Image (cartoon, rainbow, N blue to C red):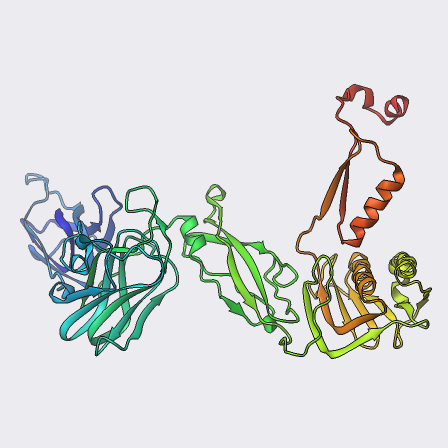
Length: 531
């Protein structure tokens, strides 16, 4: 049965010719070629006891198409082997309170798209907001108080990104009834309030929207409006139907917290509807939010960007990456006025919390102190730091292996993994001495570049404070073409040293463009002959 337009109902009456019906179901659908959903099923295999089936649904449903399917009946030899009915009645459409309300808005795009078009019961006319970015609203005045439990919005485009339903007793002071922070999942949205509200005024307040969006069945267009065909309201609680969403819609509609306590230790994986699977792709700062969703608290509050991957369960071909989500992770400390400013270093220090004034100062008695247990791992780093230190400061410095440092010393040690510093990160605490901790020797080495860069600028001092530093990009490289233009080995060494100064870790040399016959180099012996 095609009802001509979408109707809301909760009651069916079927007048059968005979009681030979054993199983049947009633299904509904929004569109002619859409997927039907069952709203009533009888499948016990027993004959009906009356020729009248009076069916009352627990919740009202909204649809344009209704289908009765008989999938079980008894056949007696000598009688008609068929099913038959006299009447199939669809009853109980809920009253749309909006049609009797006065609609106003913050404006309209044209005179033909004014607010009244959203309550005229016609799905071919619409209210369109003024062509301007920012917030817009559509208000209903019922004339007197009405009790409302359900609102239905027929969107022209699903481009609202933050919107809410509000109520008011005077049309001026508003209270939120239901709020949304993501775009509607369907063009026809049914919103059931947590509890019924009694109010004279109801408002759809659209806080923000995307200019780009596709009208139903059409290609995306970009235009600075938001538009509604119908804004319906009902006293009854109407049944909501969740349309099937694509993995991309699910991925871009995840509930990811905008802020998280850095001391929480773990970010919960966002939930996805049944039938979908989600995984974490990663964050731009894995030293704060790791790939297993472990959270390492930064020194001060820091913003992290991340995305996820969503697919239909068991179907890798449907996997898609989500949009970029931004989350604030609260820090261990709060930056305050009077803190020492972050030292100027290239690349910029990832995290810094300055002390309340004061500086570490080198002296002729300063030493490089490497933890005894880390001598094998860090001795080469210490030797290079010693040489570069003299080049930068003009001072000689001693290397010692001990487990404690004195004022004026530089202390280096390796710590167990688990603090998020990973291969190239390090922490540095600057007091009357400089103490560096790293999980691997690369991180300890990069700390010496930070120290040297600061000393090159300041001479003999480093501002007191605490630093947690790590690279944003795993590969930080430079390629030099030595095939077209030869370079001396000393130049290459100088390039490599300059790269290390700026914490770059990947040098590629382009050697030759000539085609090399692989058969001449198939073994190491042949390679030596040709070389």
